[in-house]
Length: 127
Image (cartoon, rainbow, N blue to C red; front, side):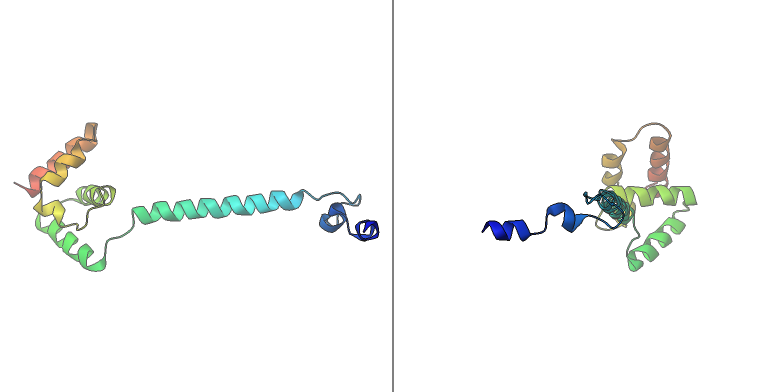
């Protein structure tokens, strides 16, 4: 049994890199692996965040834009409505033009200029 343990390669011999020279553990592989893992995590988080404010379904997008044009909304107002749609995770963007109560829940968390803008959009749509 002792003979097998004496002949078994040591941890440092197995995992030592070609540039260590002293037979020690090469920590650079851990650093490189950690950096690669960090990049993968950052890319994953960014892709999830981008998906949260992604696009609408094609049919919904067409109807949404037609409703915005019919109500005479500016590009800034359209952008604001898009944000509202994505932040509240509405099932259908047409609720922005059909249900004024959608605005009241959203406006509760707003302050300042953004609150004034969303009130102006609401008045324009439901006037």
